[in-house]
Image (cartoon, rainbow, N blue to C red; front, side, top):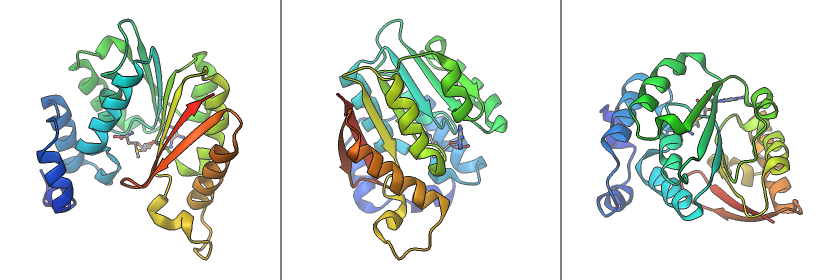
Length: 217
Ligand SMILES: C[S@@+](CC[C@H](N)C(=O)[O-])C[C@H]1O[C@@H](n2cnc3c(N)ncnc32)[C@H](O)[C@@H]1O
């Protein structure tokens, strides 16, 4: 892996990894591909966050997962680990360059027949899917986070679990003085909507770049 891969882990994170279950060979291969070929490899969930997504999905046992923002497929494969038999995972990625590697990686997985990759803008793809996901993972463009929450809550059943990454956005959401940019404004508005939504029971965690878990009432 690249130098950057090893240097981005703190000693504490490495210790946690050393004392956690290992990632699969396929996930390791995806991480290697990501850190050696992509411009922004840090977008990948990585080992610890991936194992947490897997654990949450395995506790929830969803029959339909919706992921917004596939990137190189790492988190999709982690989430798929919790699907019930016959379950499906829909994942949406806007970058057409990622389609070929994604299809290759997914085809190597035991979950390949359960994964449906959609290449396009999630804002257009979600309304066309006609699905009722009981687990949603939001991890795409931050400007659209407020719209994603509306689109997703509408189609999620009671008892569903919504997970959203980057809800602290590098700490910028905490600082009103920070120059307004569309991403920070998007994440701020998303966090307000989640907190005040009558169908949501949220828990915001200060892990990594901030992770929100929310039950659908
Ligand atoms: C943070 S990365 C996702 C990381 C991935 N979930 C993981 O954990 O490994 C965000 C991804 O969302 C994609 N994306 C951005 N805007 C999008 C949109 N409107 N619709 C679908 N995907 C989008 C980007 O191209 C990028 O690959």
